Length: 211
Image (cartoon, one colour):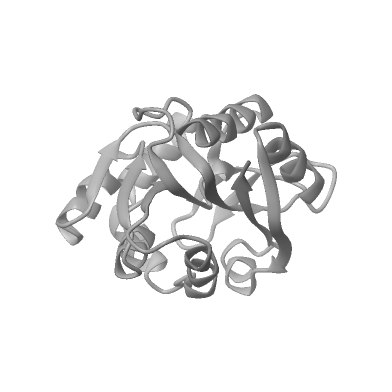
């Protein structure tokens, strides 16, 4: 399944996605991220969807820009949160100058990339647009078996969903090579996704700082 099919899924299910995203707010992870940044810092929400996390980050006092490839989600984000800047674009080729942001929030976005090369490129782009000492948050699905990629059936829409999976050592290596030091990294079981896809789902949370 190609990235274009993932984008098409989001554009076809804007209402469904926005409703489901609103049920699960990553407040603890946002609080952790916020503790490492000065107030009013510029933050990029990479893979912002319909703007849920961009709004939460704005409520923390940050100057937020959201970027996503799904035009339907960008349109919804603009209609929901008029005071936040949302841009249609790819985080494989970010339309920003070097050192534009103090923080990057990449929450469940790298899971949609098609290859390991894309993941490397995305993290290098994050490093490019982050200022020195900038903070990076990543949330990705964890690889629990041999398969690097998985296609799951969304039981609520009956559509197939494609995800790239990661391990903690892999995230450590990708971020270290891009010039980050790890602040913390951990893994947890996602009970809600387990119900949604009928298979075990775990997530990796990474928080790092650009050297």
